[in-house]
Length: 436
Image 1 (cartoon, rainbow, N blue to C red):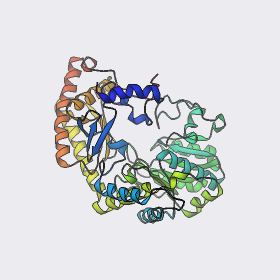
Image 2: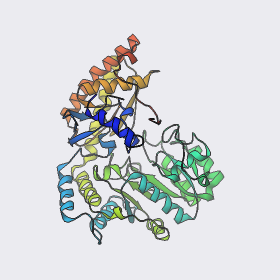
Image 3: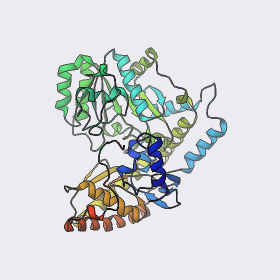
Image 4: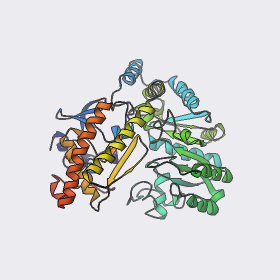
């Protein structure tokens, strides 16, 4: 147990839940052993509080750092913004440049608004859609953040979000008056959405969905969603917070050839700096002026500066092609390693954002053992891989060599039926739960 875990013990007495982001809780990786905190990061490497270096082959900053940590081009731009002063009484011109770039990348869009996180920008999208239509109900598919408009789904049925977010989330603190406003449908199950349209069509303010997450759309699925939105007059919102800037330089919806009315971006658009954007058709976006959407720190200079530098580099270097190549190599490497070890696994996700699970009744214990053994070999690893520009062929080759060794250990643990006995700490959490 290193300094990071000691500090995390203190954090749990001072911060409800221990961390600001559920996805960064050490219990989701390797309880009692995960380093928890970092002192510095560069490229694909992270140093913990004890100075030990790890190669990050897990979430790469919760999939936000497409270029890797502390990319020199982005750092140079941000340092310039800091030296110029990040906040004044006047507005920063970078927000106009950013709007022009986003619209250039997405020719269907005409206007842009900003926030500083994915959850915020999706709340903005829901507000604008409701303002534009004068309606309340939203059909949704996928994960869209922590705000009331979304968690209200679990007011009607406490399992409504199980297939979209995490099982067991209680909507405590969400006003009961929002009951019945959120209507879930499953990805690639167009019958679900048709049933919602049949029952609530003219009450729908929006259809909100991730155009892709763990898999791509079946033929005709997104096209039919677009048609149903047009039929009902609902605003079609694509949540590109996770999927954006992975398969192309922009929204993944461009790969699939279906344009929404609004599209939201965050995470990857600024390579680790706080920035989020909503782009859309003028007639929908103008509804923002009929409601109140405003925040002081949505006007600071660093976010737009980082986003401009990042997206220009994505375009200049065709970074998405590197992500796809790395994802392809990892997918093939996992497959080979599992086959050689005799460990059946299932692989999901788009190529730059992959994950696997062992086809075994105690898959959670195997995932914990995988992280433990990979940590011993110098990796921040889980049964996932978020590809970045900093993951060089040499890093990927070394990683896959160690994965092969660790998968053999997992297979041996299965054969000897002693998976949990090999763990040096508690089992990882596989779902949301209170820590106290």
